[in-house]
Amino acid sequence: MQEFGSAGSSAVEPAPFDRIAIIGAGAWGTALALTAHRAGRGVTLWAREPQVLDAVAATRRNPFLPVPVDIPLDVVVSGDLESVVRGADLVLMTTPSQHLRAMVGRCAPLMGPAVPVVICSKGVEASSGALMSDVVAEELPGHPLAVLSGPTFAAEVAQDLPTAVTIAASGEGGFSPGHLAARVAVSFASTTFRPYLSDDVIGVEIGGAVKNVIAIACGIAAGRGLGSNARAALITRGLAELTRLGFALGAKPETLSGLAGVGDLVLTCSSEQSRNFSFGKALGEGRTPRQAEDGPVVEGAVNAASVGALSRRLGIDMPICAGVESVLGGASIDDVMAGLMISSLRPESLKAENSLRIAHPALSASDDGLLSA
Image (cartoon, rainbow, N blue to C red):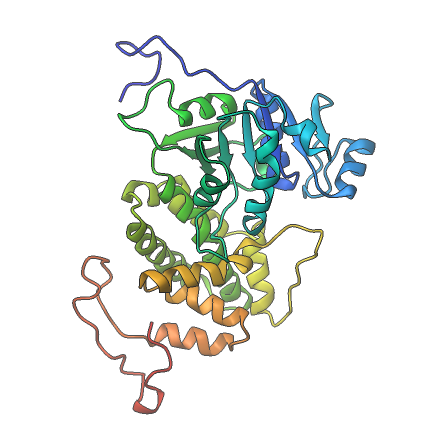
């Protein structure tokens, strides 16, 4: 497919959104506000926390960002939701996944008719098992939806370091200058922030939801001193679990092997910049990590149970995610890891994995049933 404006293609360029409202002034919301401002957009940013509003008013910096980055004066940061949302022609939701429905409900009467919404929250709703796009569609019928995801540490985006993401929006007949993903892309694109377009909303969402749970598993392995081989195995087999769930819900293979799938998975599982990896590492070291009520949310810890419930409802085998869920429920890390290692032997290919199952030789009759992974 030719790029917009290239030889032989339409001369019409996608129209950017001029005024962007971002709901949630955590590290990611703030980084996206800075990105939109650098791309020439007008930006309003809603903050719930009084300490964020006070810090920005006094220093023009957000304490949720782990690096010092100045927020320009013309990026309006406010605790008044109505003033942030009214008049916006695009709204980004960056609130934690389990609070998304409530926040969308609060924004609904303040938004103009059919204003598009970009979902930047990653997870599965615990109470319903719904993906974030389903939650927003239920609360905002008639509003076009897109999802933005990919391998992104908020601090690096805020520092204007090179980043690539995927923006997905459904649409029939292929991509065109009027496609929502194209319009969102040109609204944020800069010399350091490169969006790619997708029409696979489900695939982009699944990648974002599952990778946080796998990152906790990798952190646990690191904290336990299990080595680089174990982490590589967890990432690779975690991708298999992500892919199984994605395929069951209709995701496309190329999405799961792209930025929002394997790209985000590898990044989140490979650095202590990841809150999920660091949370898991603390568990592996025998510490009890705690999430501050007014601090950043560790989405993998929040979503392990909801991802697990969704996989069980669909009959999808996700032993690593199930193991994380078990550890968070109090199970022994060593027992869970041992169970993963001595589960039945089978083909690696997802297409052939159910064609043969061999009992692991290390699993004695007395251990039978330890894990069914």
